[in-house]
Image (tube, rainbow over all chains, first blue to last red; front, side, top):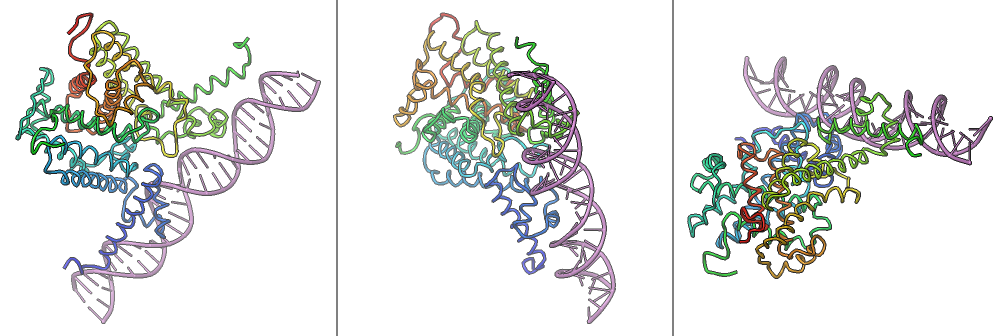
Length: 237
Length: 237
DNA sequence: GCAAAGCAAGAGCAGTGCTCTCCTTTGTGA
DNA sequence: TCACAAAGGAGAGCACTGCTCTTGCTTTGC
């Protein structure tokens, strides 16, 4: 049996988890740049060299934390979406956006780790892709539902962008009109612009009531991809 | 006379500039995290301790580079705007957006320095504010012109956001309707979401023809703040 | 002409990531 | 059951970092 298989294997899993936990603690407290392998080892009462048996380098530790962060964010967004799954697309869209913002405010350094400046000399391995895609898939799903249901306004698409739009649609959502997919990708990036500006202090002395501002901006984003007003379902608001 | 006044003063200016130049070189090559005072000093053939006569700490050097970066970006945006100053607001808006993107692609590490993850334990001094505002002022000016000219569509503004919108408008552009200012601030943040995603690799395997995609997205942004199609000139609509 | 201020250099401190060697513990196949 | 290989831990050490302190030298202003 794999559960009995090895006090050693079990210990390895435990130690690995303990390292990640302590690293996450330091990350949350001080940020990625100040995350120190030696400090983690010190806190865990082990020699710094021993830590390299578990993570071959600092970057590998960071990669593990990055994947966890993507998953944590994805989970938060999915939970928020599930909680309003029976409402209209617009409300669901806004709920997901607000979940992203909420998670970012609660985990600023982890957000910075995944959506901020990439760590220099570090390129995220393909391993991170599935975890990173979760929020995007959620947004695509909302728009897809709206498209199947009441229909989305078909946006105009300049000729120069048509090939690229078709390519993106084929990759991301073959059942959606290319023009919509293009708007969706743009809105996705713009969402993170809003969150990033608030988080990284760009709204300092500019926006005060950030909650209300964000809700409004998220609504605009929804409108931009064609998710128009109350719409759908038992009309309510 | 102040020009003759001091071979020493002149030397100081020169050395300070040389330090900044070399630091900018290293910043461009390796990123802010790998910028090393010792390496700068080494390259300049001076002792690392001597460098502290010019910049009391690494953060102070970074602050100087940040201000320069904001100014460089602002200058690029203003130049691009001036080149199309006689066209319609929409074209001018897009031109400024494209200038921001172009500058960011040409100076990725400097862009990351000002719009990416803040350096931990570092808070930008108020000194950076004027330089940082240049692009924003440009965008406000474009919308103001449009408002004075043909008029902007008045966006709806939810009651909950009205106080905040009026506050922002009073601060940023008292002559513009609060609803427009709100959209403007959101668009401003969204612009940097688009640029950041491209720059930090989030569009990897998602968007290929980024030039065309960005132009389209910038147009959407313009539309979002009320800068509708060709428009231009004294022509009304 | 001379004291004061400005500047350069070196040594040194405390910290970093990472490697190498040595030693102990553990799991396994004969 | 026991020997042997693999896995893990610990310490020393390398090359680097930001930063400080002391020691001299040079330019400047009175």
